[in-house]
Amino acid sequence: MNKGVISAFAAYIMWGVFPIYFKWLQTVPAFQTVSHRVVWSFIFLVIVIALRGEWKAFIQSLSWKRFLIYLGAGALLGVNWFTYVWAIAQGYVVESSLGYFINPLVSVVLGMIFLGERLRPLQWIPVVLAVAGVAYLTISYGSLPWIALILAFSFGFYGLIKKISPLGSLHGLTLETAAIFLPSLGILLLEEFRGVGAFGHDGWLISVLLVLTGVVTAVPLILFSIGARSIPLTTVGLLQYIAPTGQFLSGVFLFGESFTKSRLIGFSVIWLALIIFSVESLTRRKPVPITAES
Image (cartoon, rainbow, N blue to C red):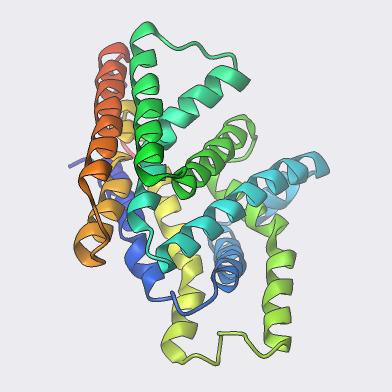
């Protein structure tokens, strides 16, 4: 199997089992978990950049304009991470997976609104179906599936900023975490001062897991970057559904979350939308030759 496919597949598998990892941290307040994730991710990414000999190039790429762009991206990432971590701890793994199922369609709509991209006639069908699926779930729940929508739109807008931003994924994420590093560190210091900090007080396992949030955040990103450079975009598009599928299966079969008939109908409409969207994209895009990883 191609190295790029293996790398991308591994990245999506890791993202798919994230609920298991963050379930282990459910006793830690979500603000603390996310703050640790930002702090340790930044430290780990700085180490990776230094080991790759890219530190000088990273410093030279910085400017106030770029910092402000990535501050916005970092803020959206913080909202996404907090919502996700809180949802996992509160038992909303299935609804979280819904957010990442509909995210590709949200990204299509955002591209149309902000980048002037046009939807092909058949692409309107999955968009309308996704809206219908969310509407049905809203009616059956009696309220909006707001967790899924926050996750989908925060990551959608994050992707929009990343699309127009100048840095690569590794340097970009480093600058994003740098932009929100001090507020995150401040939260951790304040919680420690208040005597409610988890790190170093809730057992060695919790402390180790908090430190490793930096690794589990950065490693799949690096693997994804390796894969995305050497495999067709259509392959990347199809592989992306591995992550929410893994999250969905974890919620239903590992954590015993309810999956009622109403949820099945709503999810099925959205899954149908994704199938149509994927097939339409596959038939429209020309094959991209697979190149060897340099």
